[in-house]
Length: 127
Image (cartoon, rainbow, N blue to C red):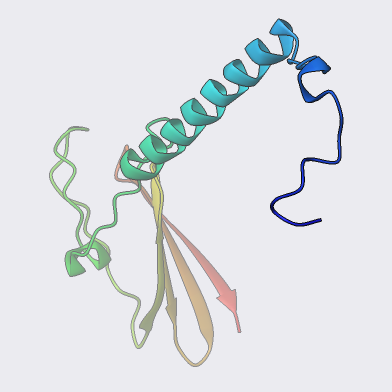
């Protein structure tokens, strides 16, 4: 076939043009809008973060080891006396308590301090 020859198919104008049903067109448009909306929501969440998740506040103060200010609950500071010949190994803190772990050659001492009352409890564990 060359460019000068007519088309091989006959009766070109006799064929019907098939169109998609209206319901299918509406479905495609709705799904397209849903995809764009989800992409926008993802971009918003990435930029602003999740507001329902509580934010952690990390204290960088070195004074948390020995003293902690607590003016809201009725007392100013908590003072913990370090066990003799011990070194501070670990400090853990949550909303209601502080746990200090001291260690020497013979024993491990855990000091539990209640933040709400300021009461101190000691647990001595043989090593």
